[in-house]
Image (tube, rainbow, N blue to C red; front, side, top):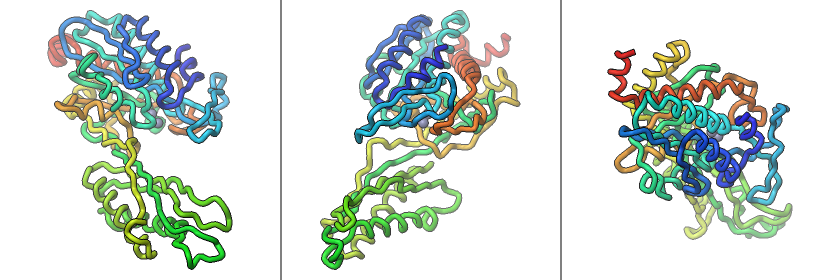
Length: 398
Ligand code: ZN
Ligand code: ZN
């Protein structure tokens, strides 16, 4: 079974060689013309079917550096060496293997249903979703200029928090923006016997970490969404040596750009203020670098999403279609829409039920039945967008 094959061959972000080759083969067999190596390992598969709109459907391909502990017969036993030279397990713990399999299912079905639609399907295998860089790289490598510019783009993600068989949609904002930044807290190192000759960056970093916690709790109004996390602290090498610097890895999440701006400005202000209070000169204040793995919020086009949700309601029935709240997770699918002029996008979720594990957990073990639902949802959405004569006439004709 294709899903088990993808699942037992996980590859980390940017290394999706085997995966993209396997996906390309399946899409070619479904009747598509496949172009490979777009923005790294990205692929685009075209299914042309006469005059009509171009609809892009994206599946992401990468896995995570997590050692699988589900005990399933098809569990991943793959390991690799990470950027720091440590051996890590690799696992499809975010369901991207399900997304790819559903994409193949939709390609086969839409190929067989060619008399029911007109236009071009542009099916995408996107690398590096977990590092939120693959979408931007595919666009920079000419996805829209060399291959096809879509009139609409859709994507789905499996959701353990939705009941199995349920589809969750939302017009407008559906997932948070996120920024990752490195903060180098600089001090003046020295011997632990003589702290008076130093400016200890470990103490400084500790003060900064605690002070950062009050930005969200004391500066952001309660109804707004803002999250600030210091997720890693690196510094020092010996019990009796005060280091010169400590590096903090900070992540922020937001729904509104003005909240993002407030958080970033406040982080700078708090860090600088504490460093000054510790007596550091202006050229030794903390150095903050915003990393490229930052993403804007995903904002669904209301018109497109309304049409797709309407089609879901007619096909799945009201018990299986639900309007969901925006998620605090981030995703780079929104970048496919943020071009000039914008491409309307619709990102939705398909419930895979609570399997005892959540996304990014070593115990994530979704029911593979979600593939059928996800594939079905993609076909319904595609037929809604690509049906000749538009959705209203088609509905009346049924
Ligand atoms: Zn993920
Ligand atoms: Zn994911």
